[in-house]
Length: 188
Image (tube, rainbow, N blue to C red; front, side, top):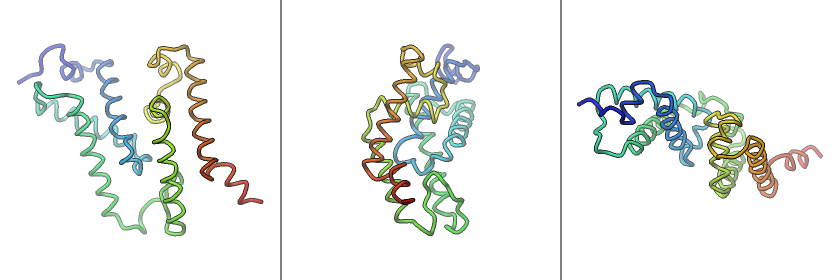
């Protein structure tokens, strides 16, 4: 049961860059969900694993064209992320790698967990546009030009909007007692 010519699945298997970009956005959207925030240091690897699984599945013709393809792609991403979370749960804590971006160490588990939770809440409370811009720039690795094209605005506007989003996040973190203000208080 080959996929119909012109279908997204057919275009994807044929190497169509536009189809691949669309699927990459779906994968990034699925993997950057709040429930997988602990895996943020592994997002790039997970994206590659999810794409590989998707291509293998399509080559074996496991997707049924009468289904919703975006849901199928995101289900593959969820399975990959859940597998990775299961691996983390099975790994002994002493052998867990230190993640300077926020994975708690044995020394200060409670403080780092609280900090990580506050950062997640601040990101969740930010606007959907800001979250999307941050995801596109930092997770998907888009350039300012690509971001501007997605938003249909000039490059300078995309830069300033991203800057304002990041500034709002910094301000929210400072109000929550995180960021530079906290480090300055500790040093004094």
